[in-house]
Length: 412
Image 1: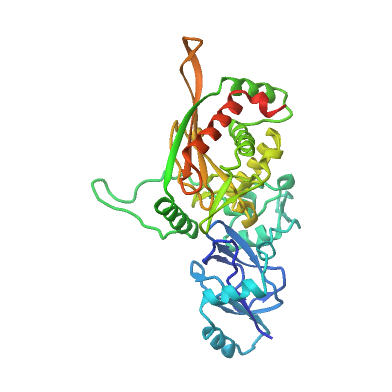
Image 2: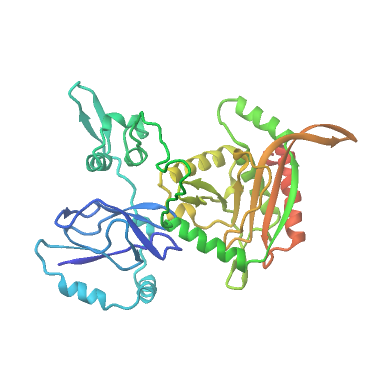
């Protein structure tokens, strides 16, 4: 019996999805758990596997096409089965919003079950020279579809195994120097449609900027002691931490002392979060994602650093799951590595605050009445005035400054 495969809701804010790639075509056999398509959501591009065995009888959304959540993505059934009645019934269903609400109440499906990661099975490809290449079945299939020579791809999986992200990130080597196609003196431009992620950024942050009354608090922090502490920790060789790791830990500790900053604005209420989940903004080609370090106040520099590095890799390779990006109670945006000294950010709803972190700059400072060289980092706290007041934010920044200027306080 034919079954409708619907556009999955792969994130809490997803309204529609775009089919980035079909891995099956009409007439192909499909097994339960087999990769069916890649779906671009407002937060990431995720692999979507079939829940049914059968033959792909109908594709409801072409590659590159967008469709609302719960609309007909595909139909899987028996070979030759008549699906006209099924398509007619689907066309006469309730509007998407009503169907989504009904499904949310009666048959909730966790996104983690709908977006399974690449399996760890490995196959080998042997070349005429006797050399062998280890590659996942999925990566091998995609490489064949794209006519990519696996011997030209560097594997980043275990023991050099080639996985899907390696195929996705592969760029053919070319000796040609890229040039502008338009002759000198000619006006030209290119356009590209908004990705689902860019649409979400525009929608969410526009609403935040115009609905939330922002105000900004700025403070300078002397990072001399932090620089010395980091150097000592990294010299041991066991772990390597970054200044960003220290900032995340300091923010988490400061939030524990100032719970009125660890808040969300939800339906005209202030939600005081007893847990501390720090969202760390990560730039990706399509825009910006904010993976979350959960229970950050209970973790040390090394664990925070390890989790941040893992999240960055997952973000760059489009492996972040909705669970990786949900539940943040406070956010940090650090542009110091780009040479930015001072900037402000837009609050990421429903959070009440976001911290902007600039780079460390050597500059003259006053110590004991004398001007001496110092290393200064500028912080800017953006606050939603509906839930956080100036005095509350200022006290939080003072505590944060104390932690960063005296890192030993975060260790003892």
